Length: 117
Image (tube, rainbow, N blue to C red; front, side):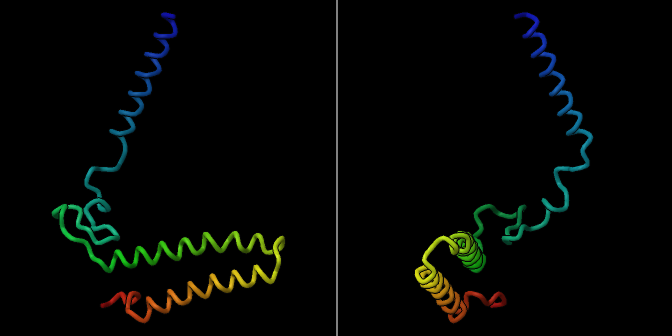
């Protein structure tokens, strides 16, 4: 029992020493260029934390999520094409793509896709 405890302590101390040396020898600093630059969302990392964010960014993020889920739903449809009734499969696929196209048209018509405005 004493030997197991001693080995556990030795392994723990060795792992702590390796982690400490790795953190000291790494070339990253706390303030490297990526941390000082604004993120893709437009937030300034050094600015006020309660600043309102752009609604345009929020809308673009929601549009991205919608079309990301679309791809996740269309991939299984392709895989089950060979084992399902082709008429029903074609009807459901056409309906799904029609709904997505109408959503895209709606976003385009009301200017949700204009990045410059």
